[in-house]
Image (cartoon, rainbow, N blue to C red; front, side, top):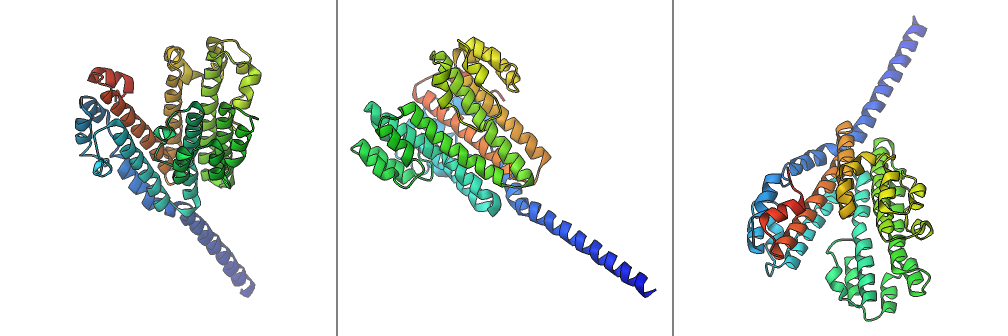
Length: 364
């Protein structure tokens, strides 16, 4: 009997050890997301509805626009504005978006929060590119600075720089020093410079996503590759409108996407490019807005934004306790802030409410 008892004891020990391991692994994977995701879902319920956007479109003045946001979470960001100008309102909305990123970083598990810090770096890229292009065009660079990003103090210093060489000193030690040096030496132009900035950013984002495990890797990698595809699609179509050749376009593409653009590069027109893209996985997305794209290429970017949100929403449903929930919220919040900024500009320009509703496109 003793050997049998020993075998049973050993078997039970193995079983309990396995159960304890699986339970611990489950808790490690999912418990850290329980609180932040519950909080984020409550925040998601407070995102502005289509009805609220319609009310805001009826504001007619920027002061009324701000007043109409007093029953939303944006209220605190408008408490210290100096005037009811488009610029002041945009800065308040930028602070609100920055606050969202900061909150994600604060409440998310350590193993995924860094991704949101890298996402914030996209505004560094946008700001650096905008400041440099403004300087080259002799325009006031500070007008193009968005109050977001990890390098905002450096960006503001760049905007105030007296010479292009001074900007190089400010960028020293950053990942963007080398491409800026190439720009100063005339090795690349401003467009290629901006591409190099985005290549650095997306490479960092993709490398981080690929370093994750299991569903975090699946979710983040899917999102990054979709974002690269969106960037490349926009670049190719705009280049075709401008009549650029395949050799001119190819260096402007970002590696890491899922769509092979080579066949699209060799066609002669926007119509032919759209026809080539019809056979890709984005064909249905493009077909829905094809007529709009032919008149306004930004329609494709909006359609791709919606597609990315839909895809991340699917991942969120499949992985309810994961990084998909905060990622989806960030995407929706960013879209909401962009709509509010666009609406403020249109009200400032004196457009009628019905025109604003049509342009902003809020039809929910």
